[in-house]
Image 1 (spheres, helix red, strand yellow):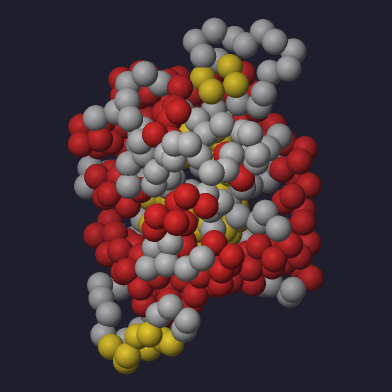
Image 2 (tube, helix red, strand yellow):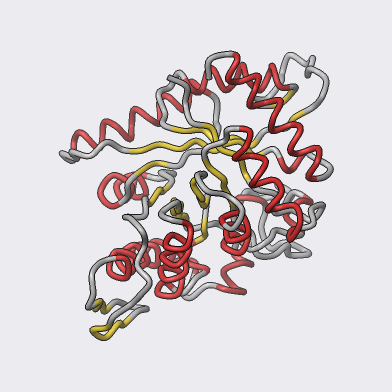
Length: 309
């Protein structure tokens, strides 16, 4: 059986958001993509106080200069689609007030007929934390834990009541409720994050890292789940940041998911063999506009399906 494929929505500065997000979302669903995804970046510091991902000297990509709000983008997509799941990969949890984010996700799920997938992370940008966080960067793990608690409370039955470090909810009716339990996905970039994933989330949300390394990381997740006595299977959704080109990449040092549709498909085949539940593609960064993005998305989808992915 073919693995479900998803597509990242156009959030970057070369796109007309009001026109292009609905157009790409509708086209992706018509092509056969089963999910639509967004990510979060809230600013582009100049000069940056730290490198990309916190790595000294690593430049921020120019595309981060303008990234549309993820939940607004998903709302635009929800309005023109019927079946595709609506995922975040990722929402940087500590940049949001937990109660308000839980309500926004519940409302979007209710409005879309139960299609939201909530991927949360803690982020890495000190500048973003300075601008928008509800707690210091050093407390990011605690904020994520509280967000998970608040989501469970707000999405659950009334009366809702909760008391934490950031959030106090007096016994209240809080609605609307999600149309169904919203799946929560988390990364696993450290031993603590891996434990949180296994103990508190529905699934794992890795980034394309090469099939061999991905398989090793997936084994770690499964092994810890077995060690902890988890009975529910851990879901898994892989994000692939692809760099598409019309011509084949001829260098021997080609990075994974770099090249034409056939080369991207070769990498999809290798990663699908790891045994994950779903893969979604970020193709918008290398497209000039929405029309090119739709054409590339269709070509890659058709090539992948023809190869058995």
